[in-house]
Length: 290
Length: 282
Image 1 (tube, rainbow over the protein chains, first blue to last red):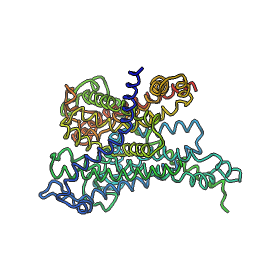
Image 2: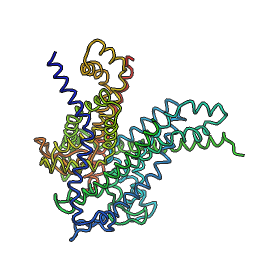
Image 3: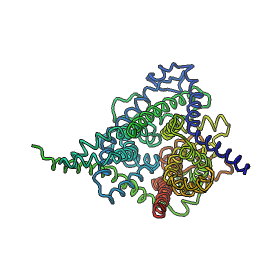
Image 4: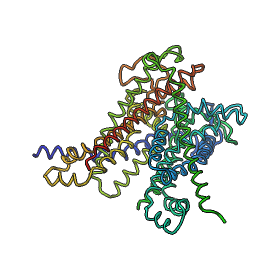
């Protein structure tokens, strides 16, 4: 009897510790990024790092300005957002409100299928299909451009946007819809004037989570955006994103070198962005439920 | 005057188009990969080591490497994830700590995969001196799958009716006995579904294993968990961008094997979920 009590005491303590594991790992990730990345600020100021216009990490002395990378990420992200937000929200509305039940299940599985395709496979497909197409349509020297990246990333953001937005639409009380229909509104008027406004904060959360996914996406973007770390002035130029820079260069960076520290500092920037995006999205979702 | 019926027709048509715009490319991607990849996939492709600088031969070490990594990740993440879910669903009160834990899970799920790679490099490869190794890669992938396992396990635990617990407690069972013998068995299939989905995600990820484990070219099987290994997603990346003049067929074949592996895991998860729904007693 007592042995059982002791045993259960330890099991419950273990459960408590595991419950805290996610906090522990988030803090650990941040600390280790900081530990390795902060050293770069011995040679370049944080403002100089963020606003420096040239990224030549292996020249002598290294030039560590990540503005081209930030702008590269921004361009690809904005492009992907412009495509994926309207299409994703429209698809969510179709699935939640219009599709008959049998079609609905099939569509949902299709979206889940898209979410399951590994990013390296999306990148590969983009390379062999989209990139040559972009090259010939716009008569460019190369199809590896920000535009190609935006299109492929839009597809990676859509599953997130569709499923979160659909949840938000679905959780609008049925009485709203019934009330509006009873007043003589058409189904579309109900969707447009009643359901969409009522689900607005959830849809906003969906959009933010989708964008978060795009900013953090690495492999596909590295394979199809051309990887040139210069400040882009057109969406039809090759760009390099924050994520692709880390993935492409960390393999060659010597542990403990300036380059190595700088790549970790890029990681800190990414971590902070994703943290901000996720906390904001969570606030929107929380607002909806409370 | 605007006709609301016609507006509705146009609006619904546009919504339908948007849906097609997502679903059709997904279908096309899968069909293209199957069509062009299938001719490359045969027994030799699946069971042989890569030859001639990865331009010929098979992808056996990459497949096995991915299996090792995923197995390692699950050994690490499953116990922690399920216990964390138990804590959240059975023990945690509605307080500040719980709110912080939930926020941490959301953030863990949102951290870019390449940042996991950096973290794995800093902690396991450099700090713990594991070097680039299966153990470092598995741990990194494990931490990455943790939020998926916690979230889905928690949903599974939540779906067990509260009355089950009340009856068990009223018969004199302790809280842990109730969880162990009543709640967990009833939530098992849900936990399994979530775990397999997490595995599928881990199997397809490239960025976290780039600097923690993946070997560019290692045409043999690893001998211990402290060695590097090839892995399918990284291998696909390598032969499609780093090695010139690889036969298109080999690339498509590798993509097909990776896609099939990931989709197979998803299918298994769906089947388990479906069977469970049918058997549900409440």
